Length: 217
Picture 1 (tube, helix red, strand yellow):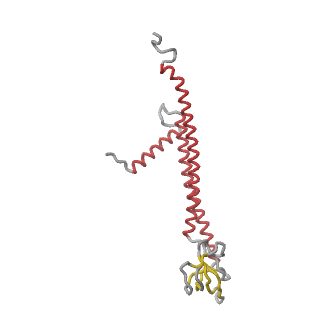
Picture 2: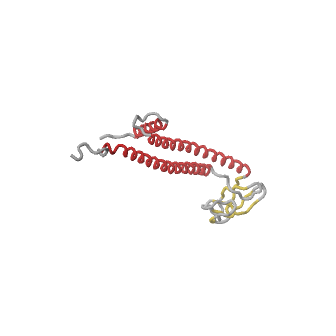
Picture 3: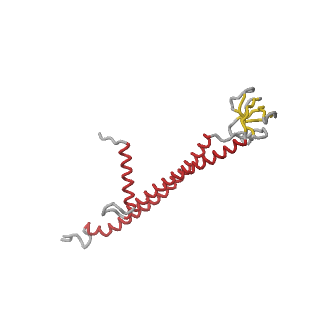
């Protein structure tokens, strides 16, 4: 029983790609290689090149987005302060439009001191597990008012990854559609060329040209 290892399969795929590259640049293929075969290889190699460039572009875009988000988070953190607040009420589901709360978060009345000597009692984002009397960290601005916390590293990584994956997927879908259309046209061209060649060869092959030897005897 013959088995195929993944490494052999990978080498085989690379050999096929190299063969397509040689055909695309006009090398290899032998005397039976048709122009449509070279055109098909050019289309396939073109798809590979576009996907490689799309992958590089997606990674570069993700890095740029992450660094930009990171710089924004650092600037936001420089203007904000994290203080300890005492929870005064039971946490409630936060309104999407509520200032300082993200969708799906919780808010409760809490008390904190900032700036020093200035006590503030206001609604603030809190964990859903907070209970009255517990202490939670709260982000506030320079005047002591509650503010949205700087973006976390996990959130920034997720956003950058989503952008990279979305861009790469769009490129892959576009390439798939374009290659499918191109390949279909090449197949039709090859079939038309075969039919034209067969029309020239078929009479002699079947004996219709000038009548078959011995016909009518």
